[in-house]
Image (cartoon, rainbow, N blue to C red; front, side, top):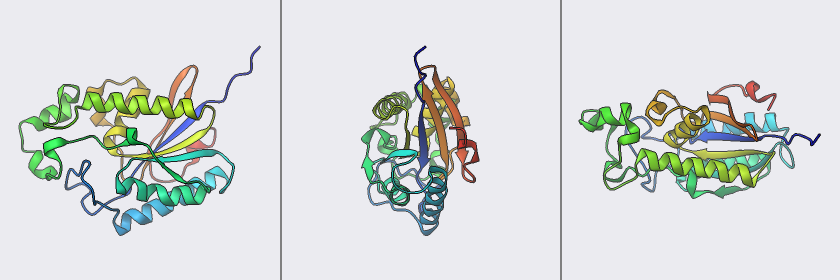
Length: 217
């Protein structure tokens, strides 16, 4: 009998906290960096990942990728350093393009008539002048597939943003995009998807503490 190949483990990390997290929809606007708390979060996660991976050098993690946004690359930097790797920028991990909504306050947006659609029927919503949730979900699905194909049988870290990670987790669960807002992804949390020939399996979602759940991965 042919030997069963080892599954690929994709470790999806949301960037750390910024000065506007939870207040503004930053989207792809440039110039937003991690706050002091966000840097502490990234450093702490780097320590946990290095411990799980057995330290820097050839080990469990083959590569560290990040969205082009500064906040994602700044989160990825200590993770890569702790693992003895470099950060590779992957455009497919980018934040959803919120178009004309970029930079607007969440409190203001929550009062708009479109907000209910964003929360309850996201598959039918496209941001004015930007990307639709469906296009974003398709993009992240293609990116996940490409990373898993590139690193078959290995573990890979991918630093992205809340909505793309929620969409990736929903896709792995077979959950419709209209329910993806029910998935919570906190700043600097880790969600893990194991991908094999039999399909994906969600190992962890929104983990901000011990990585004990990855022990068998």
